[in-house]
Amino acid sequence: MITKNLTSTRCGSNKLTRNGKTKADKQKSHCQACGCYGTLAPDYGYSEERKAEILRAYHERSSLRGLERTFGVARQTVVAWLKKSP
Image 1: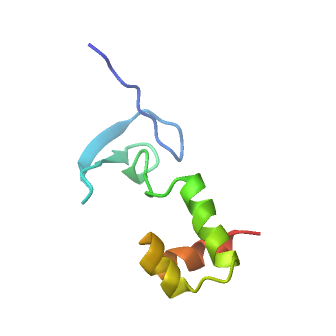
Image 2: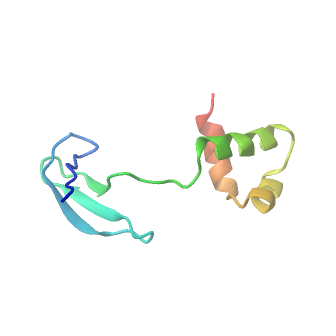
């Protein structure tokens, strides 16, 4: 039998309880120590390589709507990436 030792992402405590599932069928948890609530390993869907490819295309003068059509990524997502990049 394989067991996983799950810890909270905020405080590192192992006092977690399962608390439902997300729309993507990922397990949600609730930390009894700090009250942190959410998924333990969120998956945002875009690898760093894919993200870099989309941002490169943007810097080559592609429009946000063009990126949305070509790559299937939301314009708001690209704008958020641009705000975070230095």
